[in-house]
Length: 107
Image (cartoon, rainbow, N blue to C red; front, side, top):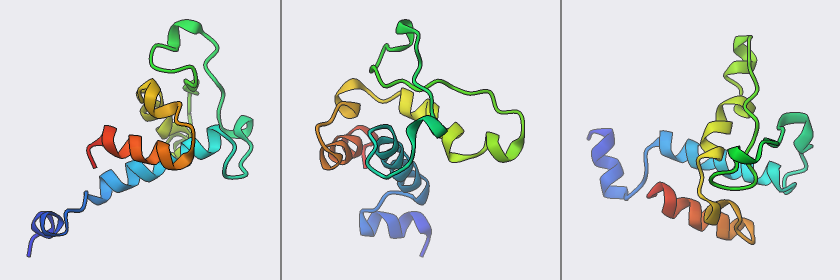
């Protein structure tokens, strides 16, 4: 049976979509200090007010010059995080964030 057919039967998203979802959840945990990681060691909030079009927790996109860093989680997740709408990012709890994120991503 084909992969897509199995996913339809199980009503499950693709591995790519699940990874995307899990990465955004981990980013939320880091931004709001829920996973024990030091936010400032990995991310920088965008200081320009014009960049806060979607939400006030926009992250600064760092320039990466070496491949191991360029393709790391902390660089590749920034664009996806910055594109989330305000109602998703400003969730009152992690569970609410997950629910809103699933809805936003159509999972």
